[in-house]
Structure formats: C-alpha cells, structure tokens
Image 1 (cartoon, each protein chain N blue to C red):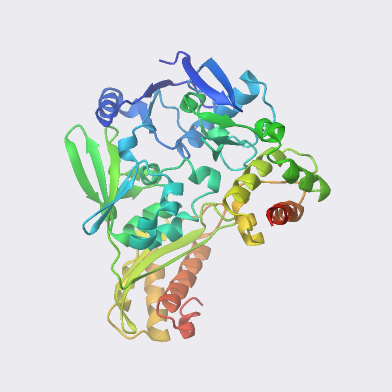
Image 2: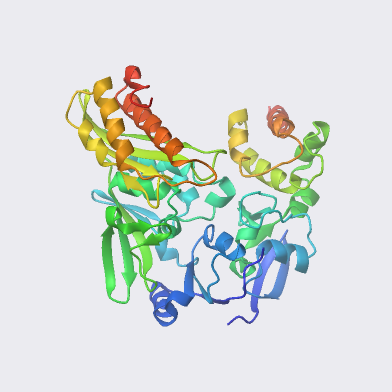
Length: 293
Length: 161
C-alpha cells in the first residue's frame, strides 16, 4: 500500500526539529532512516500529519570514544556500526548483533536511534543496550536528559521518550578487556525479526562469571534483562545449577504468542540460548544441553 | 506543507528536476514519473527486495525512501547498471544458469549481487546467501542464483589474474 498524505519538513538543526515537535506534538513523527516508520506508514499502521526529517543533521551521526564511554550519535547507521573499528574494539557485542539487523540495503539506511526509539521488542539493538548497560541521551523542551536503558523500554513500541523528545545519542561503557560476549538469534531467514534472541555480555574470573548480563529479545512486550543470570555469578557452574537457573528463567519470562511461535516454544528456545551462551562463554561443552530439556 | 516539494538529483547520471508530493516513495517516483520500470514494487514494506536501487553508491529499498529524501543525491537503477555494461557478465551468468524465471525479483537480485561483488571479490556461498537474504525469489529456489553470483565472482577473478 501507499502512505497516506502528510506534510513534510526538513529539520535544519536539532533546535529546529525540537521546535517543530513542540508545536505539533503527537501529530508529528521524526524520520531518520525510515526503515521502520515508512513500512508502518505504507501499511497505514500510522498516519502522521507531519514528518520531520532529521536525516540531514550530520551532527547526530558518528561514533566517538570519550574516556571510558563510547558515544554513538542517534543517526549512526547500522552499516556505520558494522564498519567501525571502535565498535569492534569497544562494543564487540554490538558489532555481532548488527550483522543480524535486517539486510544490507536496510542497514544502509536504518539508524541506531531510530531502532531504539521504535522499540520493537523483536529487534536486536534494544536487548544489546540492556546487556551493555547503555544510557540513552534525549533532548526535549526541558533540555537534555539521560535515561538508563533498563528504564527506557516500557512496552511494544513504547519508550520513556515523550512526543516532543528527540533521541540524540547513546552512551555505552567501553567494554572491559576481560569482557566476553555471546549473540545468537533464531529467525526463519537471516535478517528477519527473531523468534527469540539473546545478546549477552559477561566478565570471566577464572572459570566463574564475575558478571553476566543476559538481554533477551522477541520474548515479550519489551527486551528483558534476565534476573536469573544472577544465580550464575561468582559460583562454580554445574549442570544441575544451570538446569535450576533455566527453570528460574522460564518462570521469569512472559513470552507472547504470534504466528511465529507459541509461548511454550519461546520459553524452550530461551532456555536453549541460555545453555548455549553459558557453555560457549565458559568453554564448557558439557553444559551445552544444560537445562533446555 | 502537503504541497509538492521540488527536488534535484541525478538518476543514472542524468540531472532530474521534479516536483513531488511528500508521500511519493522513490520506487514510484522512478516508475511513474521517470518511467524507469525496471525497479519493481513488490511488498512495499521492505521485505521482498524487488525495489532495490543505489542511492549515493549504496543499495537501499526504494519503497522505504521518500522521493523528497533523495534531493541532491545520485540514484542508480537497474537501467543504469545494465546500460553502462557494469553488470553485463552478471546478467549473462544469470541467463546461462537459469537464475531467473518470471524475472520479477531479478533487478533487485542483480543490484544486491553486484553490491556484494563490489565489496567482496571472492565471496563464499554462505556470504552470497547472507547478502541476498533480503531478496525474495518465488521461482528458482535460489540455488541457481547463488551459482550465477559465484560464477561471476570466479570469472572476474580470472579476468584480473
């Protein structure tokens, strides 16, 4: 289908975009890469009266390392993330995840800020933000504020952003040298939205986890940082403990049903990913089947 | 502001000035306004890949861009790549290997395949599959398409050697 008619304004600066949003509020939508918004408009799921195109605001695009923080501008494209040596070095989990975000032609346009503001619970990047302990930087009528990723996602396509807000950047703590990561998703076709996926980052101390953050996606109405992971920190991991953790994880999750999978299948796949993640990160093949039965 | 906006761009090297409604997507602009109907419109929400074109040298979904967004940039379509001879060998390989039947997906497949071959001169079959995963074909079952891209890569390597 074709999008309904709308008015179009090309923002000339961040301040100009904020002015337009302040005037038009919920009737306006920001257009960055357009890889979520335009399909939704073509399907007539949304019909904004005004499109504020921020695509040419070059100041919002780019990756910088400031001390121990990696700052990623909202308009940084998925393809930029894939090509960036800073991302590979300081946020390798993100580099691994972005390769699974849609297809090359979409990665050339889609932006990290757009993906996070869209907050599709089946998309990869929101879960990465949870696992990496990211901070979202937003600007609105009241100035700039910082929102922890853990608080940012509030439901399907819902975030802490108000209609007058513009997501300007993401801040990530630079990955520790001893950090390890795991990324895997189940999808019908490479690049499709996942049936269930896991973005994880951990810190190893000998054969134990000093830290373990499990960011699940496509498992409910928002990405989930699994609390069950805490059971695996600082202790020797046995198949029995992994099985117990797997049961706790299952109770913690509240998966949805759609045409791709039932809640029971999603629970099962989440447990499979937990076992694979732990076995891979600890290099313990004996744990591979752990708890997924 | 729903009024037409003027845009200025190049399409296959030719300068174009036009007035377009904001809601007009790039695929429809190319097809309806410029009569460049090699760019196909399949799903209109970014899933099928039939509308793949180059904008600023990078492949994009033309159904997911507005015509007003391509102001000041260079757009290349399958007509441009075909007429310049850039993909003549790839097209021949598709024909030789029966990598098309109805042909609906072919322009998008060729755009995506050439994009891969420009960044990776010797892609593995897995890499080819991954790069073309965003392009649906309902006739061939894909094997012949992968073959054709692989054969083209090999032939280009031999040509350089």
